[in-house]
Length: 337
Ligand code: SAM
Ligand code: SF4
Ligand code: SF4
Image 1 (cartoon, helix red, strand yellow):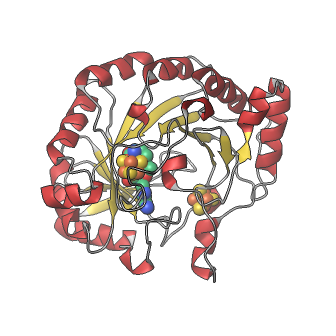
Image 2 (cartoon, rainbow, N blue to C red):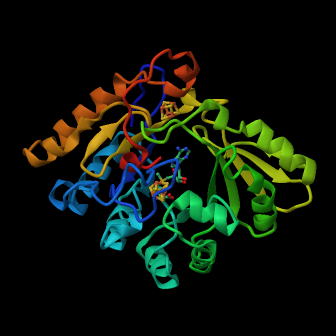
């Protein structure tokens, strides 16, 4: 199969599928409560892609080179019957990796086992602090740390390993918790990843001075527990990997602001209502749902995606610091990070 590449010679290998725009958290850096209050309206059900439609698209994307799928949201575990979707996607030949990112709030042991049985391979669980007050202030719904730690144990017990843990680091909010988080997950087999606070969407009040550069995070941890770098798993991996020299395991940093990695970005994103986004910071998407619902053939849909990817030249993070005016951007909870 010929490799499909964009204008910057980047292949299409990864697809992130946001299965819902709803979330039961209101994280300050993603869906701040004052904007996403009780009167905010989410997408009605009939606008969401059905599982059949998602499966059909994934089969088409697979023929274009996609090997890795990540389910996300909003909070993906809020989508009813998600295990059925996992089962359908896991059965598609050529899909080598099927993972999910979740806030963990709804991950019981039983649910983790059902997801594993359905064919999910790995889980990433978001946790921004071990400090109760800080975490509750970040999620803005008073959700306790202990229940996310339980979710991490459930993922491990179900064999959804290695469990990755995402910590978005925001200066003045949870940067004081970096070492405690590193310490907590050393020697557990879990991979903690520190993510630079990003200017996704238009509502999170992002400021560059609230970003803690990844290299600063690494030097802080390295001073406590010496680290060495580890080569990337695969080309296109966004996290830079390190391991503790004393055998304490692995960590990662995602330095999208201070050391962007657009030139290796091989990801497409699908929103819950079937819009194809070519970048996390794109202003709008390309409407695949219309093609699905207006009777276009698989071949026609494939051609449409191919045209979109071939024309792709976005590299927002590499241009961010030179931009003189703010641009319209999709919100993170719509396309899932
Ligand atoms: N609700 C799920 C969760 O929180 O894991 C999945 C969707 S969430 C949008 C995916 C990831 O994006 C999470 O790890 C979250 O912490 C991260 N994220 C959200 N807003 C961010 C921001 N402004 N900067 C960096 N990462 C962000
Ligand atoms: Fe919800 Fe995840 Fe966004 Fe937090 S980061 S508000 S859990 S979608
Ligand atoms: Fe990819 Fe856009 Fe992020 Fe660059 S800014 S790495 S092109 S999603």
